[in-house]
Amino acid sequence: MGEHQTFEFKGRLENLPIPLESSNVSGELANILTVGVWNNHLVKESSLNGPPLLIKSVEFEAPYYPIWPPESHTNIFFDSPNKANIETYTEEILSRFIQNAFRRSLNSGELNRYMDFWRSIKEDFERYEDGIKEVLVAVLCSPNFIYLFEPETDESKKSEDEFYLASQLSYFLWNSPPDETLTALASSGDLYNQLPEQIERMVNSPKITQMVNSFAFEWLRLDRHKSMDTDVEAYEDFTRFVKEDMFKETYSFVHHVLKNDMSIMNFIDSDFAMLNQNLAEFYGIEGVKGNAFRPVNLSENEKRGGLLSQGSFLSGHSDGVQAHPIKRAVWLKEKILGDHPPPPPANVPELDPETPGFENLTLKEQLFLHRNKTSCLDCHHKIDPFGVVFENYDAVGRYQLTAKEKPIDSKSKLPDGTEVEGIQGIKDYILELKKEDFTRSLVENLFAYAVGRDVGFADEEEINNIVAEVIDNDFRFKTVIEQIVLSPSFYKKEQTWYNKIFGI
Image (cartoon, rainbow, N blue to C red; front, top):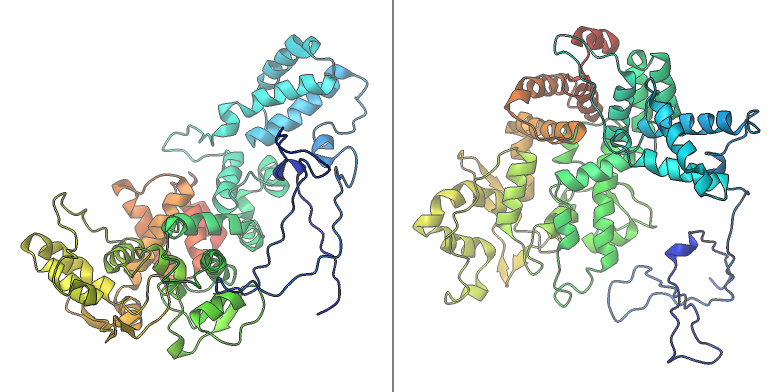
């Protein structure tokens, strides 16, 4: 407090807003670049601005390159004893670039095609580098770069294409091309023998967050949280910073379970939550300081833990004004239990707000009126009980005991006759009776993500094998990943070989 600190930011100049020329603006301050500083330190109300900042000075330096030529240039135009021989040097440049782009060694005659193209256009450019750039653009337009080509292998034979395995593994776990280690192992034919070590290395790499974030976004339908417009007057402290932190809560939670090889049952219920100060204060949890997300031990009365009580799910499956039990129920059945309810008939009526006293009814009472209609009864009997248990959580995911000045009744009787109460009741129900269902649902979703297609009937045997291995290994998250990599759909290799490698 009261002392100056220096903060330095580096970025690409083209990402900054460029002042536009205008004949309507003149004088010394015409077309200047205005830089704004936004301080969002724990701001929860529109009437608060956060602690004031005194800006002593601002310095702007551009362009900035730590070295020249930049690394992006020298990675392509590298030093070589053959630099004086343009033909040979061009072959070296294109050979390295194409192998990196195609993620494999070159096929016979493949380099000649691009060398011929370079020879045909090199005289069109004054600079040698510009002619090479034109060829590199052609490389990046090739289907060999844009797509992952699965080798055509007879069903009765095993595949020997380790470069394909390297790409499959890297795009699954890192959402990016193979690094030098994977490429080197594929080139030497040793990637097969080091799969366990490579999976461990890749899971522990910071790059794993790219898979975690992308998969969690798809699996948990976080797009609904992203697109949800919340009533800012009713929930003034639900700021854009709280909303963004809810994404980070889910991502960091999934990452923590994976990195520490914990049981996937933590996704159902856990004795910790991943929180920072901003989100903890919004949830009403005390003692969390700082902006970094970290595991926070939970007491029973804090009503958090697992995915089912996280704001990204609860907010994304509301209507922005109040909780939406149907949306939450359908999400729970589809994403957690793997049970996809049929779509509603086209002529199903909406909840009727014209019903006398409707505005004073709780969600549970409104649903009772709605499903009492003959056309709605059957479907809602299978769905509603899974949504009522979330009624203690409002539209932005905060826990509440009353709604519309009435005590909330979150007791529910599930279709199989089991009676549960509230979020803890449904968590206990899943952990006691639906462990295998949840395991299968997670496996199917991650399997589809890994192989890049929907799961079908033909995959049932593989899914069953993966689920069985996960259960036998105490539901460990890393086991899910390992077994997907082992599956024939991920890569065609003799299963007995994999069993030997992993000691199964």
